[in-house]
Length: 71
Image (cartoon, one colour):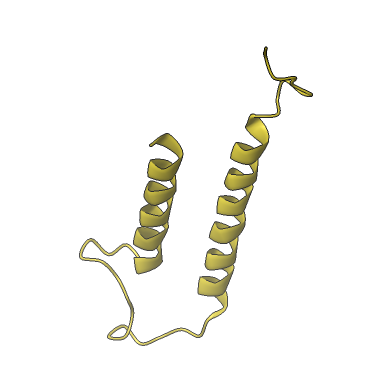
């Protein structure tokens, strides 16, 4: 006996919800970074290649979410 499926796209809704959460978090982080007061050059958090640290945090977050979704 097969389970009744109400909507053919029903399995996609959790994935869409996760994607929307990711986009909202990224927007919040970017808005926060733009609004916070500017720091001196010595106080700025940058990686060795000059990329801001929050980009590294976002990449780590997206990687972790991808690992959770795939595995």
